[in-house]
Length: 132
Image 1: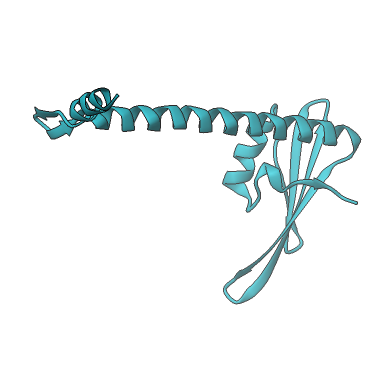
Image 2: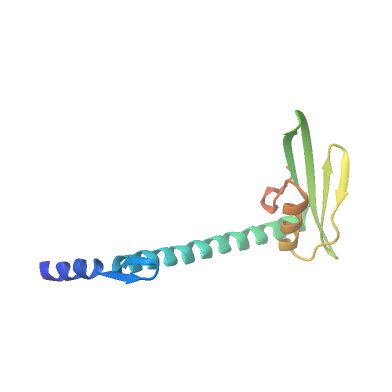
């Protein structure tokens, strides 16, 4: 058993000289572990996004969703309130910021809603909840 461990450790320590510098065999295992970890994390994030879209779609069938943001700009407080609605044309978002209201054009998917929110408002899709 000690001989096997010795051979593995010896193989892991072998140097390879390349144009970019010296690399070792153990670095291949590190890169492989990072790649596997990245794939696992990416799949978990994709599953969470899918679950969020499903929960949001289900919640929108019952009632519009709202979000509120309190921020400070130039020493003054700014209140933003957003409402997400679903209708026959798709999804619409209305945002009221210090009594000034703006609306989105009809958006076809929740991914488009999230993109619009990120570019035009302080909100993201997960900020919206049902009002109790």
